[in-house]
Structures are given as structure tokens and as C-alpha cells.
Image 1: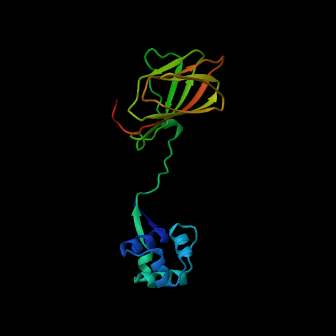
Image 2: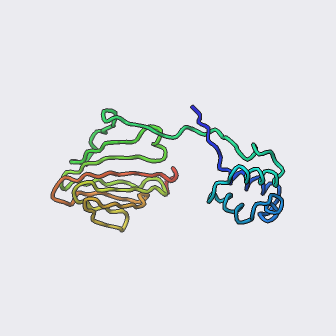
Image 3: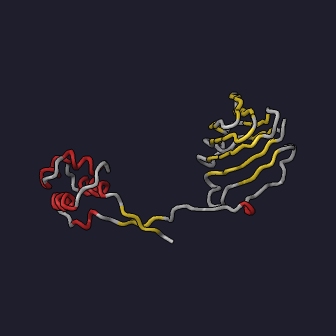
Length: 194
């Protein structure tokens, strides 16, 4: 279902003013609304009164209803993935002690992937470079891990957050004494590899 939204009046005023090749000064003279007020309206710092909108419409030589436009937009995303729908891929070959839950909904996979990962003590996930520009964002929910991305190596403790480019070889390793719980977001900038 397509939703309808009202465009900000300041954007519409600015667009019409520029189409008519009017400066703020000229519109101020024609409308009787101060240049400072016009600037604040166009930058959405103030909401104009009806009488001010009417003056601006007169100054622009347009009907007042031309300053209110409704446009159609795609519906806003609001997607729930139930716990029993979360994908738990088969264990990765050669990667023992790691459980991965893929929390990503199907409409997101082109742009972003979200995982909840459990690492047993001593387990390590090695990853090949992703597409150029790809970034990963880790929030460590439990335990201690060491993240390596290219020449960068850092230890994370519970509650830490890390962002890094993952278009290079990278790894996550549980270097603590207990299980580690990792929330990982992979954001793709584009789909071309180096």
C-alpha cells in the first residue's frame, strides 16, 4: 500500500522561488514577509501562520494550495521476524564452536545483514574480503573477543562497539575464558569486489 505524505512547506516555497528566479530579498519585497522569516521558513526552523503563507503565495504569484503538496511514498518499513523464523545456518566447515543466527529479513539482504553469533571459548571465524566498501559493526553482548581486520587487531570486552571495513580479510576470535555473544551488522556499500 502506498502512503501519502505532506512535503515541507519551506521546501516548496524555495523550489517555486528558485523556479521564478527570485531572491529572498525580492520575495520579501513582494510578499511583505521579512527576508529573515522567509529564510527560517525555507530551512524549516519555523512553521508559518496561515496569513504568512497567504502573503508568500501572493508574493510568488501562486494559489495558496500550490504551497501544500502531497506525494506518494513507499510504506515505511516495520518488519518483525519471529524467533521461530530466524535462520540458523548449518555449522561452517572448519569453524567449530560457532553458532550463527541470521536475523535479516528478505527485503534487507541486498543492503544489510544482521547476525547474532555465539562463540565457544577458543573458536575463531575467518572471513574473506566482502564487496568493496562493506563495513561491519559489532556489539559484544557477552565475553571477550579479538577482532582482526587487515593490520588492525583489537580486543573487545562486554558492551564494546566496533566498526570496521570488512572488504579485507578479517576475523573474530573468542579470546576470553567464557562463551562470547556477538551482535554483528554487515552493511554493503556496493556489490563490486576489488
